Image (cartoon, rainbow, N blue to C red; front, side, top):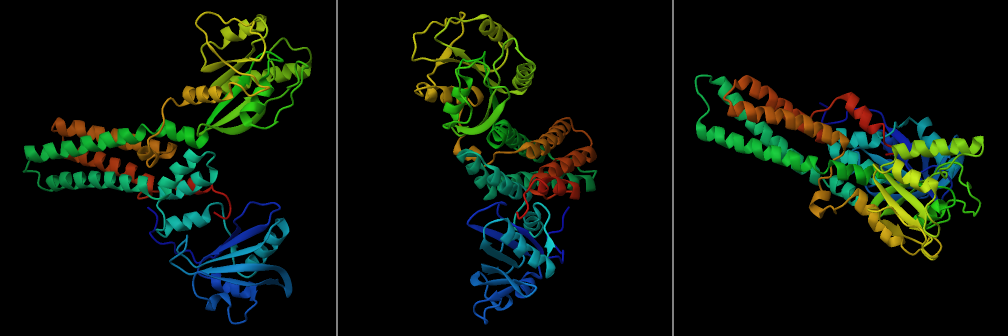
Length: 459
């Protein structure tokens, strides 16, 4: 279990804004020597306002000086512990954007005693210093990577601690049950009274019910965080690239009347009714005419095999051809939507009995909203109530909860069968430990390394 306080004497620094050209960039510095490092790097416009003498949560104008030369004009903010993200002294320096100014400011801080932060180290320190628990720390990354408003809302709820509070109540209930069992182990001559046993069983049943409720959010949580992959397929020249452009709202793929224009897959992400969808435009499926087209067809089939949803595009202005029938049969067992394009022309395509299609016109955009509704319904038939957004678990939480539930279920069965309390106590401890992993009550260095290595530098 990690220390409740980070005793690392190092002060760390990193660029906290995306690399590249922009209006401004920000460099973050955290640790016990942050103010001294800032004093050595920063020349304030007001000689009386050097960082180490400045009040907390104040902003100062001046210049970064490196080896006697001006690096950049900056704004420097001073935030003293414990009222900071890491609960350490924090200095944030805002300089002009671009790779070079930010790098030169960072190099100045490193020369004056800071150490380059590892990915996620600021958030890791926030966790080790008790500013956030582990579930809240993960929510920081979820918020940064959110691709839809729903995903961002779920991350905000978790960052606010709403999942953590419910997990802590669950763990406390398991620990109270464990305390009752261990008390009876200490007095082996006294059996658990029937009414006490009944209360313990009720508490365990409630815990199992709550775990099941949380586990039921796992698939929706994965959907919001990761999205789905939807492959657009069909024979050449039916409008696959036009459909991709319509769904994205931009001209992403080249559109041509020449069959076989798309030779490789094209991927773009869009939000469809709050669900992140990775649309993949594939090469037209037919008998390849050359090696390049053959490779495009091979890649298309590989993409289709991995896709979670297939949008099968057909030309509604022409009768179904050999390849239309072949693809309708070949992918009949896969999750798919049939999209009948060119709805502005007389319909000549007739589908086999039992199949229905969404009619669209990629030129005018007609049918696009109905298609988006169908995509959302195909992957996510219901909405998520606001209260469930508060407890949307991720894959790590799901694994911990499954282990906790299995152990708690064994406890329930053992108590009902009046089995030995030593085994009951062991499984109760395993259940509490598994649940505690979610908020970081029980962790290992390997687990922390795995979680925080997924963060960006500067966070």
